[in-house]
Length: 320
Image 1 (tube, helix red, strand yellow):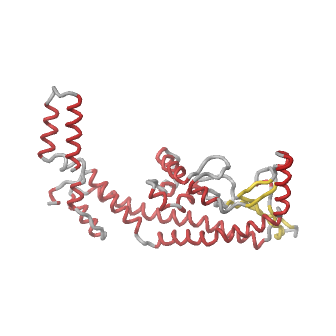
Image 2 (tube, rainbow, N blue to C red):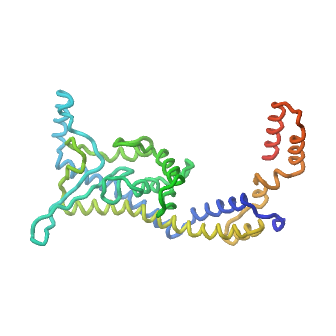
Image 3 (cartoon, rainbow, N blue to C red):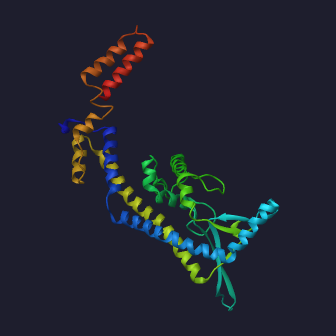
């Protein structure tokens, strides 16, 4: 039966999406590396933040924070100098230059979901890439494409990418400015705040730490960056397979060739279900539906209500 059915665009899309879905669920080395990197990051996140909070409280003791909050309550805005933050500049001066003089080594560390992965306080594709990869399964369930940044890597900004990035960000609850966001973003960020004293941005308040502590922060940020790089590698491997899949499906003339390909890949495709759910091929043009469609075209005296009824009836029969 299938040898007589010609391949068309809708069949090709159905095969492509079915096989691509299998590619994404396969336990490949690339997939496992990504999942392991995400797990490693999770293991570090809370522990390293606990250390960060200790370092912050050394510079901004909790008793001083409490006193300043008391002053704010008493005197108002002039004493409004305490705030919670999730990103910090940490610095140590245990290294020396060529002349033996101590040098300051500092960097920016952001514990928020959309925090940087490279030490800059400014957002980039990597900040959103991490957030999308971290909540990949949740975003897929919401109908979003959390792989869009990886899929578009190396390409210029374009409406397709912007559309899907915005959808992911909205689903995560990201919002503009310096606030905490809502939904998943807020739930993630809420655990990673510490009290700081000062009214300026974090770049002007380098918080002293030891070199060992600084190296722990660096290792944590590297673990965060590894989530991005392993996700990129995994998606690259899927895209390479999908590129070949598209070429093959485009060359196939008959449905049987697509079914044979799926079978060779170990993927079961129900031919009857594939044909039944096709919306542009055999189902529409079975005798009953075709006759009704032609009758509807010939009857020029139908009222608007009759035409709507016949059209709805036709569409319902086409689906069934």
